[in-house]
Length: 479
Image (cartoon, rainbow, N blue to C red; front, side, top):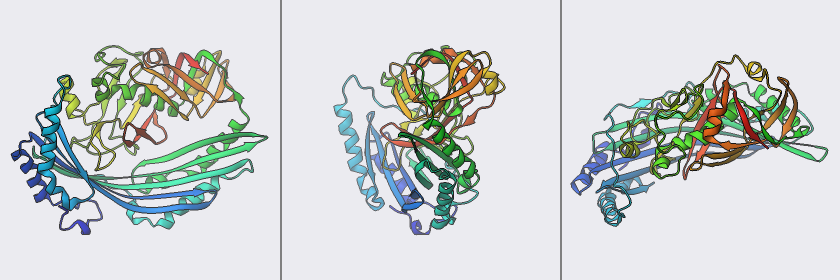
């Protein structure tokens, strides 16, 4: 099954891992055996992972992961075979078709048959070239980045532990389908991160930071790591001496990081059409309705330059494009793949993503953002607030997409008094109902930006980006 030239991959990523003649024969054989649709999808991931603790390298690993999946649709049900053994994949066509047929025979009357919406058929390859290809950068150069980053952070004796990490990926994907889709695409992703821990007079505080995104070594090299490291140290020390958070309903301003996490978790997931179809979304039945303040416009854009969730082509061969989820407060569409687009009778918009070549594509976000509003800056948002909280970043949280409820913990925060940021706060959490919060947004700064790179788990883990402007919310529940 592997291409004859698989051990001679071109440095720019345009080589193929799969023998295209065999791949075409496989999908044709599946149709002959009774499938209505068949595809072979491969993902190759050449990667590096380095971890350092307090200036000492703990792990420095490079690897190559290659996996492929054969999918066959028979009588409205999927048969799937995934493997790392590319040579053996061609022998699994009949078994995979038979599996799909068996699943179809056992499908309950309550379960709908799978249908696929039509998408443009393409044979065009797409390769996003990095300015500095990670495969041309030595392991020592990557270690040097972490050593320098660590030195920028450990500048105060109250910083007792620093864990830093560096990751990069060169990703190549291939897709051949029974409909005539035959394409390959590639791109790179590079990030570095730090978790900083401080201790002072029995108090312990931690702070995490991550930078990078889609791109080669330049995605990290272009960042001012001294500024990022110094800021992480300052935040850690500030949290050590901060006061406990107030509680109750009050005006909240979220920084771009917290704004992004909110819009990803509380709104983005309910916009995923597979969750809507499963009855696990508070947005079910609300397409076309006003669900937020007219100030609010939300996009999900896999083409965002440098975005951690960016990609050129989705897992079904659909060219990536920006999707407007909410426009001036109105819910415009759901994120979908071919299956959910057919279910809701809406246009496919290229949101099929899979963790790797061994996983079935799911509906997933990419880079999800609230667009900028009409306030000049943070000072403009602060004006007129007698008592409130300015919250930054996130330590994680919980979301119930069906009920539309959420709770997030901020990394750090400040009390707002009479339009000014005063004492630092710690242990700030924000909770509420998604649709109520969207209607209570009454201020957004003009400038929106991508926040820290993130990862999203939904049975599979994929890189994502999120962000937005600073966002003011009336009557947020702070605790």
